Image 1 (cartoon, rainbow, N blue to C red):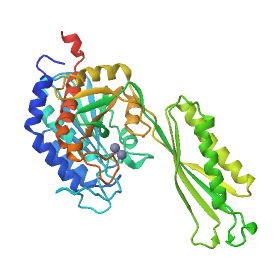
Image 2 (image 1 turned 90 degrees about the vertical axis):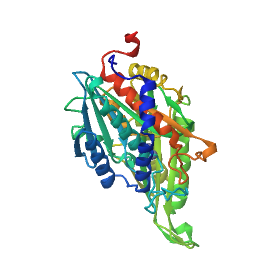
Image 3 (image 1 turned 180 degrees about the vertical axis):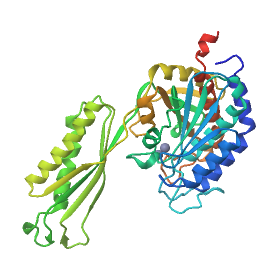
Image 4 (image 1 turned 45 degrees about the vertical axis):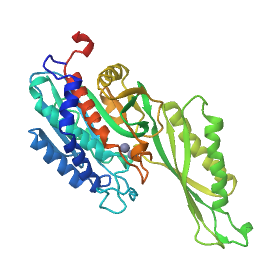
Length: 407
Ligand SMILES: [Zn+2]
Ligand SMILES: [Zn+2]
């Protein structure tokens, strides 16, 4: 960090002075959520706001992505800060004055807060452009919830990490499992590779009174379901974080018709490539052999381009922890691995960096429901802490020295 760069207490005070703006941006985005790959108004809002701060803006980066570039006072590292912008197909059940105006769409994962916190950080950093070297890139990403191609990959393909080339990347997620004001992170693997699968079982339908003349795909799907559960209990190392869940089974139309087809969909979560490919192979093998033994046929498909494992660079993350610890009113803890997936992983595959969580559990304010719940509610008092952390990471990593070197 440069001598002139403000310390954590100063940054927190400056962010607190614009806290109202950050909250109001968040509320505006919350009331007007947009689904993955449809973030038209949100990205326009973000681009206009950045331009208003004198930040150079590129729009339509890999779809609805927005990249802002803020150059510092002299050459130095390029630090990218990322916020996702998309909402979920959930009907909001929280009674707020800024409740979603769009029925069936809700910012239930808190990406509205991510965009607001990053815009707040951009505002503070734009005032300090003379006080840090290098540049800060603001990556506003669409389609994180998409789960397949996502939004990070198209942005990368469209040059988001080039010109200038990014040296470090950081991303922040507001997260329910942790208390308000707690930063949670870990070195190395943090989140899983989420592989979605679909098994289509084709039997031979007929009358419900004569199952002996049919190949009942519902019965077959029940056997396949049981076989798949054996993967986690019998075929994967028990010390390894692993999940397989069948989350949807569809078949049939009424009580006395045995259908022709049953479709099962589910997800596998793994933290390393070896287990991942083993589990995918087992799903296909077990489904196919079970179906075959019962006279049915089956087709097993995996969603292409699944997100990779999210891996935090150890050295960078240790430095991030030191920075976070300087922010008054917060606590930094090491979290367990999480078997959710995140396409921030795509940035981390190419650039060292850290993904970290900011807790928002606050029972006094009713902020107790998990992300993706229709009752998910954010403790807005933590937004200033998130913005402060993003500013501090930008200041720290644009310079070549660590805060320890300074002393
Ligand atoms: Zn989510
Ligand atoms: Zn999310």
